[in-house]
Length: 140
View 1 (cartoon, rainbow, N blue to C red):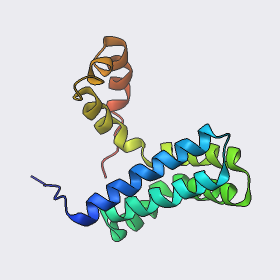
View 2 (view 1 turned 90 degrees about the horizontal axis):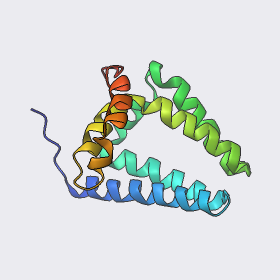
View 3 (view 1 turned 90 degrees about the vertical axis):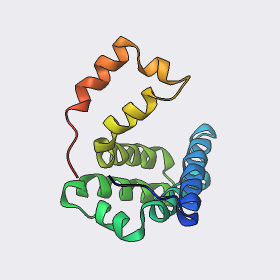
């Protein structure tokens, strides 16, 4: 059984990842503010690197099956930096979905076990939708 030890670097990484998501959300709410979205991207990527390690992060983004997601996420990040945040976020969202699509089944099971929110994810129409994608997980 693999255990996930929570040391200080991983705690900082999770905090940075959370702040990255928060800043990206604020950037979208404030009419695609490129500064907030760029800050969110930087915090998210640095938090991911601290949480799972730099080597694992680089291996994840450079796997041949993840090239399409990595390129679209990187191109979206570049578009945000040059001042086209709407189109950049569209590309980033596509890249994010492609990159992390293998984690959706695990996330669905996690969401079903949360006390209050889990009730929504345990409803028959939601579980039938999630079960369709549960079998498509690609082993890493």
